[in-house]
Image (cartoon, rainbow over all chains, first blue to last red; front, side, top):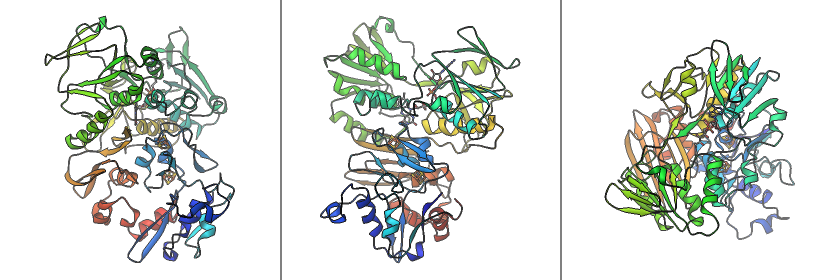
Length: 142
Length: 413
Ligand SMILES: Cc1cc2nc3c(=O)[nH]c(=O)nc-3n(C[C@H](O)[C@H](O)[C@H](O)COP(=O)(O)OP(=O)(O)OC[C@H]3O[C@@H](n4cnc5c(N)ncnc54)[C@H](O)[C@@H]3O)c2cc1C
Ligand code: SF4
Ligand code: SF4
């Protein structure tokens, strides 16, 4: 299955992927409407220190510990991608306890959000990857 | 191949998934005392609290799950005995079910200590099943006029308190231990959680216990009294291992299982709360009655039953929960050097021993806690990472570039 992979040496630390992610999942029609004067809560996050930076988002593990830990069935695997049904989530954060990558976070509504590879929004293909100016994240089979 | 699974909880569900990942055709029969489809047992407090709905609780898996997974489910049915040599299980209905491979996932049973006068208390319940929760809701009614007494300040008692606070006139919690969550937290974080819960009106009586009940009155050992209308018994649970013991399986509190989830009797496997598996620290069988453990063991058992390879020996005690909006994640053991950090709205304790993170507690800010959990689970040598960095916040930057390439670049995934 195609997944988002990180080429750390190419990352510029520009945070554009975070902005594209926030926009892609905002339901708004333009990036300006989605992001202007707003604190963003993207599902991909840049870690940076000294001269190193890289993006972290869900690995869509073949044997996902988050799904096994979820007490509500909100997390499930669909065609190899790990998806979240936020209407079922009760915000216990068992999945945050379990994910070795720190790839899930709390949404503004207090439930869980995570990368769903833009499968549920209108873009259909990870917008973070499309927005990355330096191919530091790619969407491919490996 | 004929598979029989006893029980219908988390371990049973993941046992089915384990079997079906290998054997798509074998006959699977599931016998479960409860009448409901698979549901998240921990959701019962959230249901009473109004954070989820009955419809969502019963939809842990899609409605056609059993049909699509070829499972013949006998719900509302009880197994009364296992005959290991004949390879059959006996049902309460009198029927005998033959099996080639059996999995016992009978879970826990609430433990009720003998207490003077308990039989006189009319409205009382344990808090373990969906029926318990619905029964409790019915006892409380709509009037918000019932005084509730909860025995036990462990996770179950406190989740119950949170769930019913808005439905009750008052909630009192009594525990013999001097602090709340005695099995989960040391003193300081327990006190922080206690203050948060008290702020919303729950009253605690700790280091005390009930000496005697009158129908609506608890007389405490200390001499105090607590009047109540509804009593919740949440003192603790025990592995439900009697059936397995009678069948000849080795039981030490729980049903003793190998890393492949085999019991001591051929063709009988077990998973979940009812089991005891070797603790990597002590080598002794240990009961780990938590959801993720039931899911991991169930899947391992299922794969093995279907002839596949699988083993699970990384069971770690862990909890993720919250009370009145204060989040708590903890894992591992607290037997190590304590590295503490506190801010006005977060408490974090890391426990380090022999170049390993053996456990941690995070309160308030729990962001990315799973990175710590993985250090505990994988027994990562702290000298192989930048511990000073990861000690501040959980982050992948603390790993080597090679390790990151593996984790994020899919070098092995
Ligand atoms: C209120 C509450 C909150 C919780 N919160 C958490 C949490 O936040 N995190 C966490 O990790 N864990 C939590 N737990 C614990 C968690 O629910 C259990 O660890 C988990 O459900 C164990 O799954 P299991 O399949 O082993 O057993 P169970 O889910 O208990 O399933 C066992 C089933 O077997 C059936 N059974 C027993 N004997 C027979 C028989 N003879 N014949 C037929 N059927 C039988 C029982 O009726 C039951 O349905 C919580 C539990 C409760 C009650
Ligand atoms: S959230 Fe974490 S555990 Fe779950 S699939 Fe993604 S990377 Fe894996
Ligand atoms: S926070 Fe939501 S998605 Fe995560 S484990 Fe709990 S119920 Fe499942």
